[in-house]
Image 1 (spheres, rainbow, N blue to C red):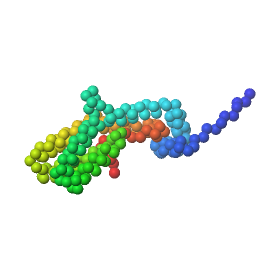
Image 2 (cartoon, helix red, strand yellow; image 1 turned 135 degrees about the vertical axis):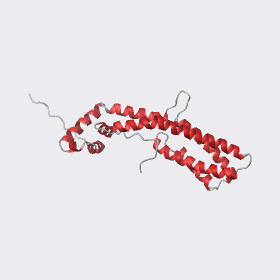
Image 3 (tube, rainbow, N blue to C red; image 1 turned 90 degrees about the vertical axis):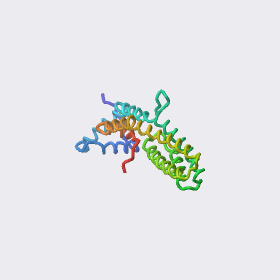
Image 4 (cartoon, rainbow, N blue to C red; image 1 turned 90 degrees about the horizontal axis):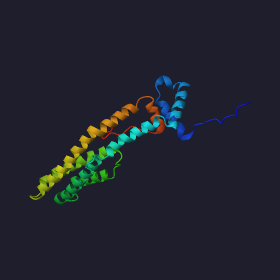
Length: 215
């Protein structure tokens, strides 16, 4: 009795491109044919069955959730950034009254706030850049407005800037103590073989840090 001829399984298109990226992550001795082919076939099977890939994706999602979560009091990195943006908006309006809408420091702070409002709230790396520009621009605006402020305006400026800078301290502390260590731990684990190949097959990238990007 003869076995029926089975159809050949062929990987094409985007799947082939993904496997190509995965092959580049193989250790050097394993890149030689047919070792690489066997390794990639095994990893493709692992990925299809969800063994390892599901766990990697779940850990990735849990890591990013630390950036967006709130505690029992409603506090969190995004919440502090929202409160900081509110303080910045109030300070910018006050700066406009003191310095004029056409003042360069006012315009820069307004543009920085617009940039932060338009940033991807799920991307810590993008938000870091926007936050850094906002902090710098508002700081320059505060210094310029403080020099030209009238008697009743100085206290308002100081109160708004104190709120703005205190939120910045909370944001930086939460990122340094909670989110960034978790992201660094995940990235370190995901960078090792075979997790790096499984990540390539599943499209799981590095967790972005709330920190300056590498140029």
